Image 1 (tube, one colour):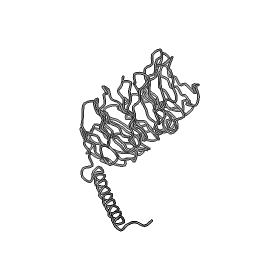
Image 2: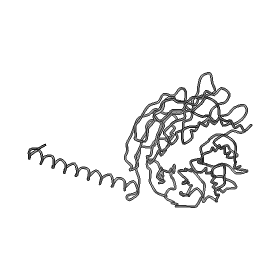
Image 3: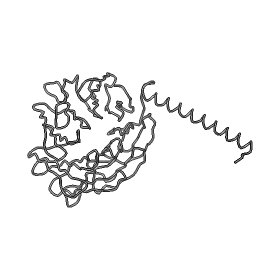
Image 4: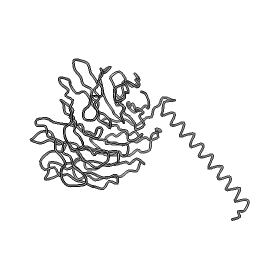
Length: 355
């Protein structure tokens, strides 16, 4: 098709203008990215409030107070600021999803990896939420006539499984990375227990019970499960059989993190602390003296970040130190992004790559 000369010239000018705009936008994005990465302090700022909680999902960073949720992308750009009503805010995050809720409330706000937001009405008062790497959610709620209810939602937020707890109080739940198995931590007159279910059927797959013991957290480690109480970490295989444990002895559990390839514990005794890294089946990967008081631990794909009272350090799962920084002293939290970069969170600001 033949075009008039004027149209041809106009098209060329538009193409040149579009190319210029794209170049400017790319340069601006690169400058912003460099600024977030540390060339000019590596920081972003956010509106701070009492009782706020923090999380990373993928390479994004989120902060939520009782009145507001703020989300920043991997380049530090504020992609979402939204009013919320969350008297006791909570965040559950994975690489694929971020869920925002208030303990005792009955509504959730969910963001997917593309930043799309959706609202989800829970089936009762919410007291625990977890997200797996497929973007699925396990939501633990109160339920009239039962001791509790765990509802599993797929990535499209459709309910795909429910466990009505008749004989135990569900405390927390975690989906396997492939989304095929639901693990529920519960308490009953029998003691602390773990219930295991296949999302493909109604029957309970397995049950582990420890009389007189209260487990308060769980997570998937190297294809199996890790349960945490005040006195030990217990490891189960994917079929729910106990395959290992690590007793804390006379040490006090100061902090811990469970994720992917290892579970890490900071144990305090006699005015000192030590770090312990455990792999699948509770295998001892390493232990080492901590350089100070551990205030927070995060684990991501075999990388460990520890916030200390006088700074921070990063280790591999064998507790070989890969970096440290005194500049993180005073931080409220130290988090690991999916790409392995650390995010140190201060009052009203976050810094990337300090460690």
